[in-house]
Length: 171
Ligand code: NI
Image (tube, rainbow, N blue to C red; front, side, top):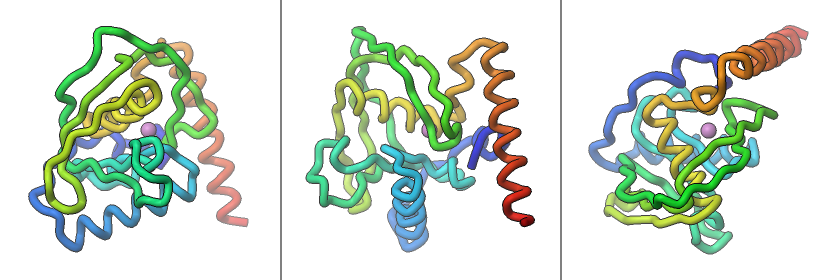
């Protein structure tokens, strides 16, 4: 879903175990991420407040043919002092890019779809992606990194886009 939608700001809730409903959520995330050509997506972006996101396998350091990597109940356990500064996009902000300063490296601990804990350490784009998806689970969004003027511009652009989609659906 596209910002401003209140569901993007919901508090997220921890997942107790990987059951059929989590496997269903995982499949919805995979389908949505690939449909939009995203590198990652968080459950809150589908209006689901369970604490989980996925990352595209190649970016996460797995073989390209692997399924996307699920991060359930993720925690950021380390970040570097060294920073990176580049443009960032988000499926909830179509065609919007915002310059965001983030640590160059980040290490995340999470539970996988097999119910086992694992760690993932990323540098550059992977670190950025992990931190971006983690932000979603805390309700933090790209617009929180910009000033009030740019925020208003983004809101105007996305509200217009939403209006255009609504009239397409009516037609
Ligand atoms: Ni995003």
